[in-house]
Length: 223
Ligand code: ADP
Ligand code: ADP
View 1 (tube, rainbow, N blue to C red):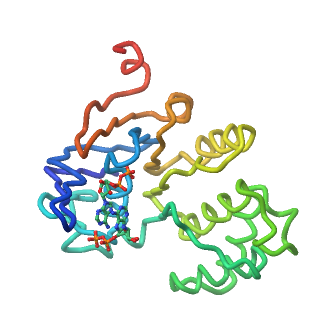
View 2 (view 1 turned 90 degrees about the horizontal axis):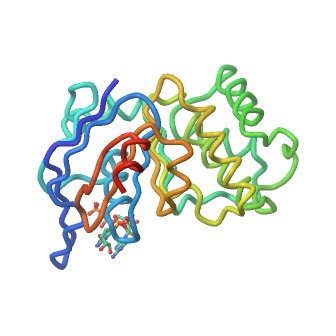
């Protein structure tokens, strides 16, 4: 299981280069993308999620170019964008059934999966509540549940700790660790402590470039 980003650049209108010749090799485990606003984290994640295309360069998933054969990755992909919208009037089960239907999933297996995810994400005590009444942490967990419906091998989560209170932040970190198993989890943050505690690999981005890529211990030794 590997994701290889080769010489990826992304230009937006108005001569904005959000990524500049990025090279990054990701293996099984938790990969933390660290960088300030505007560093290119969301752009990179949208490319990994196959909803945006690099201007130049390639991304391969287990050797397959995701631009040429996006479905090879999409079947195994879970993505939680930063601006993830929920339907405030739905309860968690209704919302996840709807999200599953959009992904072409349904039936008894999916119902079972939804109940497992609600339990895993500690939302099983809120089954009758509408999502609109949820706290920030609960909304984020329903977003993660949505991304986990297809039991993805690649999970991409954009700025998951934004808007969480300190307690929710700590809980989120242990959730990430629980979810890491046979998959690659890529998440972005501008908070160093989110990454130190959880990531197996850290990639530091600044102005569209990769400044460093390493395991947390050696990276922290070098600063
Ligand atoms: P980050 O997630 O690290 O904050 P982004 O990938 O959102 O970084 O943004 C990188 C740069 O690209 C910024 O200068 C941002 O304004 C610009 N940018 C991002 N998305 C777009 C877009 N759709 N159109 C134009 N510029 C964009
Ligand atoms: P792409 O060219 O990769 O298809 P889009 O232009 O469709 O990307 O924009 C992707 C997302 O970025 C959209 O949700 C859009 O609203 C958002 N976006 C647009 N302009 C900017 C910007 N200047 N900075 C950050 N995000 C932006």
